Image (cartoon, helix red, strand yellow):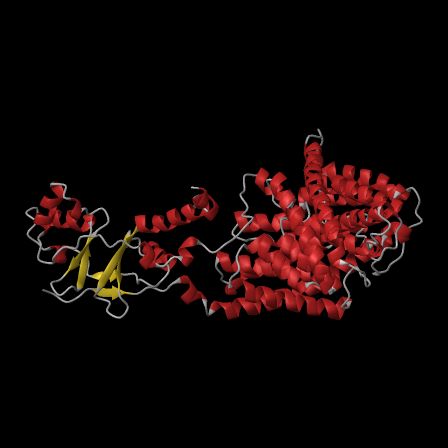
Length: 600
């Protein structure tokens, strides 16, 4: 009664993309090397502008403006930088505003990871001007955005998919982080948590290559030391756990307050009845006034962070830095200028942690807390909670100290702070701006349910096959009578006497056959399709769904790999939805525990 159906195979994304990992990894290596050079150039540029603005000398030496002798000009200098950045944002690109990471996230979400070429030039230049003229920012945000822009541009020059371009963008961003702080592992994790939201070989391998090479280039050009240093401190993890727990609570509250205050300041600037072009200059005026009284808040402040971590500052100065640096950052960044968020938040939160330890020691002299240890933990906990990149900054802090004793305090304080921030902050400091524009940013990632569910777990086994000799007219008559076994909504398999799968007939096949022959004398085998796209019981539901979408069909016969003519089940759209239904039940349906059963 005719030969068996012909099985058509299709290539799945994983199978076709495997050979692309090598190419993307080579491009990632190039991006990592470029990110290392970008970090070096930006540091030198910031150093040059700082020396010209505050010390009136031509030098690339990277130093803080706090020792300047220009007197009242300390107020005017940031305003000059603010005016220049305002014009660059107005007539160059609005994308240079902010601290860089949300802009990279926006490119991933809205423009298929495409970033304009001018951003790669204007962002580091504007950041160097803002920081060099006293802006209380770090260089890491602009380097991260610039590295991401370079990765995106390479992905636009070379023929790539949107997913591959996202990987290249993340490679540039992660490499920028690694090149800034000499923390390659944290760079990898930060890119995963904030840009990729996946952990797959196609992205992880290129990302590691980019961060490794960026750190290597950075080590050659800038040395192997981090931008701020820390001596040996006593973390005293076991005796200090209650205090670290309390510090975690304090850090969570600080993350919430800072995030809300930053966007409140930004809202106030948006309400000003003047052109946005002048907002950075107004913010710079506030910065200059603060900097006149507390010069340590000016510039990046890596040296001040080192002083805090090494317990070189008194309590009064720590409290002054914690408050004034945060205030200067909120006013400046809220005005829409260009600069990084990490370093200033590190300084403010480190001062908070150091102050906490000193105050506890005053109250409980026997506690003997190390201010440097608590400064480091607070530094990671506050920013980790505010950015929802807790794991990245646990690793970041560990990479700075290379002290295993820091692990337990970091883990405890950071997750406590994160738990509090999650409860009270709907969006992180990175995603609030995007959420206000109506963009939904995933803040967690997991394997898709279709990736872990097999076809044989969701396939149907109750589909009624039809014999190949049945006529189209007979099938149409049975359908007209409403017999449930002959519902063509999803198509029906055609099975021979020997149990072989011969073909499949759909509603469209039936209508075309009746149009050609109204009497319906043709057999269903003649009317149906004999070149079949099939699924296999042991493959993932995702692979089967991809095959359905690729071929624009709504059902797949499930056949044995050993015998492709033996039909063992049937997969349709409702089967796929059943996989999600099962996941919803696992997430939302509570099962009776032993305690309830015993009580019953």
